[in-house]
Image (cartoon, rainbow, N blue to C red; front, side):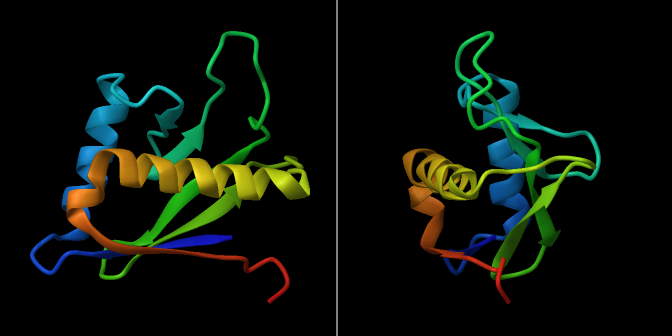
Length: 116
């Protein structure tokens, strides 16, 4: 699965990524975490303590910091993700983008790469 983000003309990918990371770190965005390595890797986290729904080991990781911005799902070693989880994770990440950063974005495209 992949998320392609087309940014407004004057917005660089690094700006959006840095802002996402800042909002996650200051808890303005509560259901995502940032991995320390590789940089700009985002993991969905359960909303309530003890809730493990959708927390199956998929990480959304930046491919390269160029336009259009591309993020791909990577699995932790030995992780198995249910088919429906990708849809939920993509939906929640797109929700994050439009709820917090729509002023920076022209378009978002979600692509299923599992059968390609």
